[in-house]
Amino acid sequence: MVDLGGPNRANHAAVFPGPWVRALLPTAVLACVDAGPLHGYAIAQALGELGFGVPKGGSLYPALARLEEDGALEAAWVPGPSGPARREYTLTAQGYERLEGERALLAMFTARLDASVNRHDGVTQTAVVVTGSALRKGASDVR
Image 1 (tube, rainbow, N blue to C red):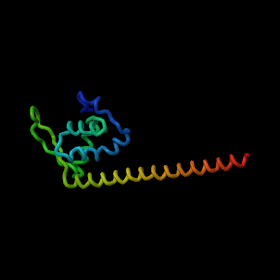
Image 2 (cartoon, one colour; image 1 turned 90 degrees about the vertical axis):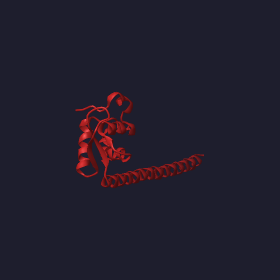
Image 3 (tube, rainbow, N blue to C red; image 1 turned 135 degrees about the vertical axis):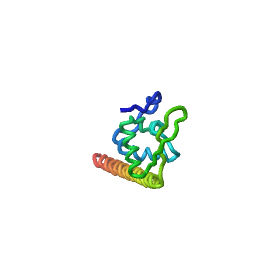
Image 4 (cartoon, rainbow, N blue to C red; image 1 turned 30 degrees about the vertical axis):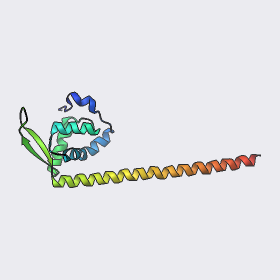
């Protein structure tokens, strides 16, 4: 397996749990390439900066191949600045639509989780008020 971390790997440890990283890797790759064409190593570094950790080649390159097969990315060999050619990935129109759709779904997911927290905060506060009232009433009955 190819390690794409290089000297900066330690600086880009994963912030998110492993299952999230695996599930959202394709979306994160599309988000990295949304800013412009990138080669595999640059995508790995960008993922690290997003908090996904710097993936090993055994996870990244199969994901890139699937995204290319799905029509979300186009790949082309471009001359390297000081060495061999590199495979550079570009977001296609289909890839952009997919990314926007997945961003919208993730935003909806986050909004629903936030609404759930707010709804439960109200329930907790109500329960405390009711319990507090009951305790005050019970205390007055003891006299």
